[in-house]
Image 1 (cartoon, rainbow, N blue to C red):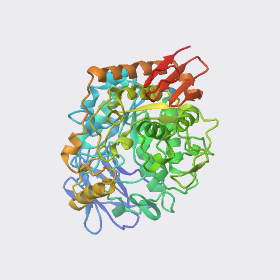
Image 2: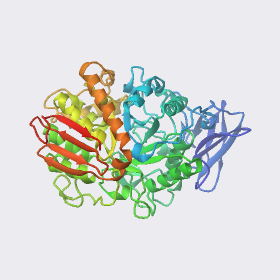
Image 3: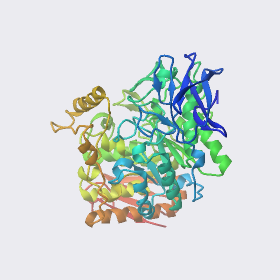
Image 4: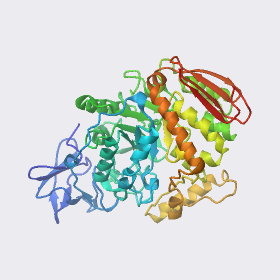
Length: 556
């Protein structure tokens, strides 16, 4: 740390409050009914210890202009992103189920959005489904971001407090209960965290300190200042949050959102610093803890070890989705223009990236890096995920875009393909309800802008169909899972279960060795040295010994 720890920390006498505000000469912390002056320390931190304060004490920081704002490093926002922060001590959390984590080659990830996974939309309600996920063959539940965002409904990527848990989901104690329960069922928990930007509403960091800079522009405006002369506390805020989640909340993996949008020219990239800090916790506690990156770079530096790279355990490889989706649907918009030939999918199955330095028509330049020497378990493969479903105008899942029988060979390729499998909630039984884009911004101007922007951006792609209003509650409710297990839905669920069981029997081989891939049109054969063979046909025409739209597994 480059200065005092951000935020509020209980002490034997009360609570120690610290906030980075180098441009302000004086600050106060408002707690227990009055303002307590803070002393300015070297590095621009303001610190005060308030006797008598304790866990649950509400507080704000008071700026010289009279504004009283929540704590940028708040660990709890019980009444929303604009209201008082509350002192919370994660050291008081109680744990019942020891857990050492999941080996990387054993990871089967299940992407879960807390608000739509159950009718209640809470972490406690989701706990009831953990036995079913374990029985399916999932080994790690990946929660979409749970950091506080405005209102009650959001994907989570508009979070503004990196250290806190959204109250509508149950707050920090509920996250701890979920993690502990998952461990009791032999499941790891991966937390999706957003360190490339903060949401547009409730983001008060700029009022305290120069957290942002015009030198780095992102899709969300000025980028976080991670490499300027005063970047130490900015980096500490984010690295400290990552350490909190793995150490004090005992999560087993972090999924770093859009690392290509973490703009950092420092000698050591923020992602590499997070990986190092998390690895320190893993060594100290004897646990398996993974940092997985969502990357649009198709660059092996994400997983290559330092000094060549950032050292992540694995990275999302969206080329698998693109190749499967373009082949099955015939869609060619945007990035899908680079896909659609069965040969593209064959290359992804044999080496991870579609592009390894060749020209991309969509990018307009050479793209990607060679993957030679990288193990298959360094890549995460998903045929569906929240982005690829939810960013469609109508949020359609693959189950409504392709013949039902096509879902079985897709499941086989995802479950037994070389990358680490990731399922998007409901995929295991062929959910037909959409996953739409939804928000609940309280700022009327922002709410109107989001609704209109979504409509304008996607109206052409929607073919004249009405775009669901992100701000409307019915858009959110339409995205709730049905959890169907009857008829063909149950048949698909059982197919996933059986395929994932095969994967665990061959996990070490699949995770370490790329398969030999041969194809006949839209049919593919994957073979491994231990005798495992997978044949899939992604078309209705008979090929490679399959009648069509089918798969076959042989274990040597």
